[in-house]
Image (tube, rainbow, N blue to C red):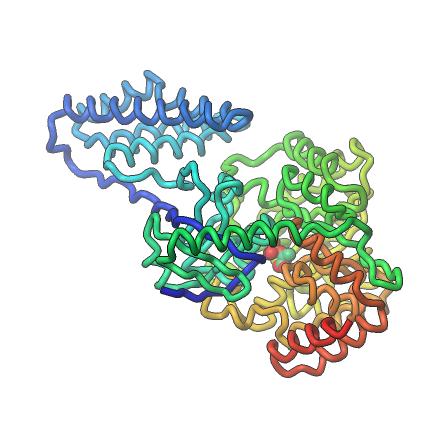
Length: 552
Ligand code: PEP
Ligand code: MG
């Protein structure tokens, strides 16, 4: 059986399927019918089993992960908690509900303490889910475990889930939902693994242990293959991995025209990879990714330490840090936001200044502390700017708080039309083509049915990029692209030809983009861009670029 979705990342992978378990439903608050003693005993057994499992996992994982897992095991073994659960069962609750309630009240208490203890509250919720799962006799939610490499199948992956994935085991991702710019897709590019996103209902037929071959180039998942097919695909995978290691030079066209090759980072851990591949700085550091699980507002001191860690770890060159881009598909728990009918069109990105001005100011202050402390060259930019007034508001605020270069992201059609008016206000702009496509085409980037409109080869996007590059070059400030489109090696050439000054790409794509830029000079890149600019469809645009590139 062959399933089709949107192929992301590169390469091929194969192996058995492991599905991401569904999150557990909250236990219903019904009157207990079983004997209290039996329920208390069951809860004790489950707490002990989960504690044991966590400790074993800690030993296997080692390092920092062991400390976290050991701390979780201690939570499962906490006598006060066990007592509280027993009391609730005696008062008439079922074991599941008593576990849920006792952990929730403990969690609230920790959150109330704030700081480090507050951060541990989320770990407690994870332990509670595991104990309830054990009581129900179902798999615990969270990333599946396996000693063998596997293909992870999920409805979609939340950024919080992906933090726990072990990419020496997860060879490919397959999701029912999501489009080419969803977080699953971004992650696949970052980790250099293939992903097929937006497979639709067919993804439900991929049950645990089904053998599959995943091919990003053909956008297919072939299910029910033989062991021999898997082995053949894995040989191709190793060959591809070997071929993607190009020699390291600065990002430039063949004639020496510089196009700095920067990396997109979400945590200090990714910096080593960017350095190894010769990235010339960081073109986008997504600060909100630090806080997707934080229920407690980080203090200036905590933030400054986190930013300093990033600045210290980053590759040499400028580091572009983006202020918080919470909202829409990236909720940050401590920034309480009202329910919105259309969150992608709501109070997100820099618009959070309305209710969370203090947090944005704290970010800028913390970043300044980190900048001074590390002596690194920091550029700061705000996401989701729609008007020149907003750009000025951000630039004035940032300049009043620090000595960094100040810029904005170009993600809305409105600011794209006004680029030349930013002269004298900003030092740089960086185009977020993921959101720019979403708003230009009025097509939700998370909606798999609209993947064709999120395609960066769409002529409407390419012409908009040409106008943005022109406006910035005329205005005398630098213009980079940090959206996923820049990670496509052929598209990076188009961007250079359009007059874009730098590209910021997924770490895994640094080598491939370097190789493609270095293959042709500026005149030829302009020729490719011009050929693409007259295309009337994405297929025609991509074919025109690949055609021009293949003639080299
Ligand atoms: C973008 O929109 O292109 C971008 C880089 O920001 P994010 O993907 O984090 O929204
Ligand atoms: Mg964006």
